[in-house]
Amino acid sequence: MTNAVKEYSLAELMIVAGAEAFRNDGEVLATGIGLLPRLAASLAMKTFNPDLMMTDSEAFLLSEPNPVSGRKSHAGQKQETWMGFTRIFDNVWSGKRHAMVGPSQIDRFGQSNISALGGSYDKPKSQMLGARGFPGNSISHANSFFVPSHNKRVFVEGECDVVCSIGYNPARLPKGYSLDEVDIRLVITDLCVMDWQGPRHMLQLRSLHPGVTVEQVLENTGFEIHVPANVPVTAAPTQEQMEIIAQLDPQNWRAKQLKDNPPGNRA
Amino acid sequence: MNKVQTAQQAVARIQSGMTIGIGGWGPRRKPMALIRELLRSDVKDLTVVAYGGADVGMLCAAGKVKKLVFAFVSLDFIPLEPYFREARQNGAIQVSEIDEGMMLLGLRAAAWGVPFIPTRIGLGTDLVKVNSDLKIVGSPYDDKEWVAMPALNLDVALIHADRADARGVCQIKGPDIYMDEWFARAAKHTIVSCDELVDTEHFHQGDEARYVFWERSMTGTVVPIAGGAHPSSCNPLYGYDSAHFNEYCAAAKDGGFGAYFDKYIAGKTEAEYQAAVGGLDKIRSLPLPVY
Image (cartoon, rainbow over all chains, first blue to last red; front, side, top):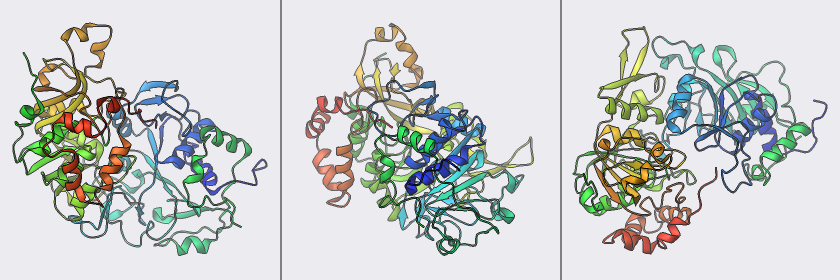
């Protein structure tokens, strides 16, 4: 891109790459769980997909995304309808939503886990949140994954310890369903962008962040991924995108999301 | 009809082995004064249904829970609830893990008097493998399989509202009512604590009645307790007490829940509890969260 900036953080690169997940969504609720995914969805809504819908993370749908930092109250936000939790589920089950979530584990089928790790189900080694909305989200609407630290503890060798979301796993396919009904979109990590469009829904490399090698990705992924013949470099943020990100996050909370706030270009 | 009781009178209705539902969501508008009263009782072996926060953590830590029906237990700004984790990691409680939306369906099924509601939720995941409460059924209308989310029939529901009158007309003015109306409808008996007890005339003014989300026949008991949601929030009256939640969580590593219980709950009245956390004025001045 001609007006790409030279200086940007890895967080900003991941926000811009994450925004791409929502580009062709049309009129759906974009939900980014966590600060960087929320900025990604907000950036998409502020630029190439103004038809997106977004909540105030509490109980209203907004015509304009709220900044993620620098606000003292919800007063004055551009709300367009009430969207309490009961209505969130009506939206989820309608399918008109795309969530970007950060699981603790992702396996080769695109199944994910936020519930518990290790031990047995009745006595896990590490209890986490519980399955939350992952089961319903994953069978109802599009989901993308956001992984701040790409490693084999996240991209696990076997299946997830607790499978919280449906993936492209033939052995678990419910009767009457086809794997093509499962809709897992992009995986944004600190190393690369991937999707599930490889052969038989294999995870495939889509772009490498500047300065990252294919080998680095393979070494840090616990299962085989598809590497196409040509893998482009993830597009750097444009000047316009950087300005909008700064407006959406005036207090630069994005700089505190990744350890040591590394630069986007690690070449 | 006068449904007003003290917390002690109201909670005396709850007996060991019952299934109770708790309104609110994570750190938001939890009936914490009623929970504290329950913690002081000798009730045990409860089945608890909740969008869990410290309510669930405390009940687990105090050994009150036999079985937990949950999608998460979290304080949001502190993602992992330490006492719930401890109970799980010790294998101390039975669980029925479901999705957030499934809990809504289960409460609705109970409210509507049907045994289950069919849903896609859970298919293809471990929930249908590890949770024996969830059965897969066929449909008379298609060839797909469906999860039959069972009715979550509650003996008692505990809810905190902004205000109520003595007849059980309850008002919630926060931006979200969470699933409270469905907890109220799913229970044989609903106990509502409220920040303010008002005259019925309150609801006749302006659009006050628009903030009433279930009819009074669904409210069994009204317990006026100003600040009764503390340390959770009761937006717009007060936010959650993050400093207190931090202390509560830190106790898990230093002294355990027993130390927290002895300091704030054991043998104390609610007035003494509030004095120990800084007083009602301080509770009422806790800032509302900005997301």
